[in-house]
Amino acid sequence: MSTATAAPKKTKASAAIKKTAAPHPPFAELVREAIVETASRDGVSRPAIKKYIGDKYMMEVTPAVITHINTAIARGAEKGDFVLPKGCVYIRSSCIKLSIHMSIP
Image 1: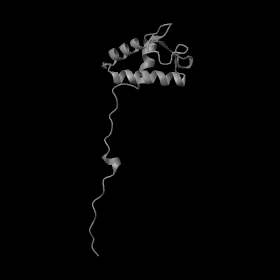
Image 2 (image 1 turned 135 degrees about the vertical axis):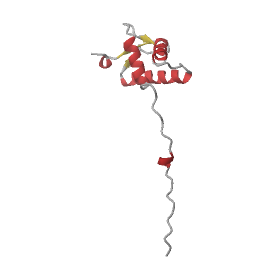
Image 3 (image 1 turned 90 degrees about the horizontal axis):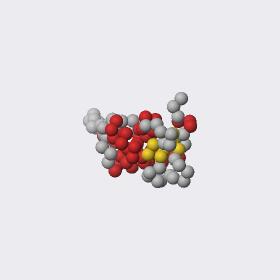
Image 4 (image 1 turned 90 degrees about the vertical axis):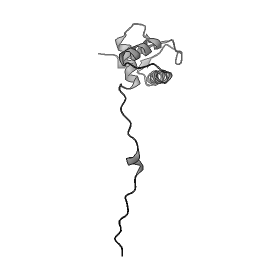
């Protein structure tokens, strides 16, 4: 009998490239922070949220970033984290508010 050893096989897990962490918090947190920092009784508009995120995190507001912001707002509204005006789920000019349970104590 021969005592030859076989080379270990590479697995997909070891060959996978690890993603680096984003230099900013998740977009839902960014939107929440923008609403809190630019507090207004009527809420904060989407352009104001985009401007705040772009200025504070030195982020270029590209179409991809806008999509992430809009998705975070839509998901937050579904979960109840954000309050949108009645019937205005997809209107881009509506003002967004924090819901009561997300408000700062």
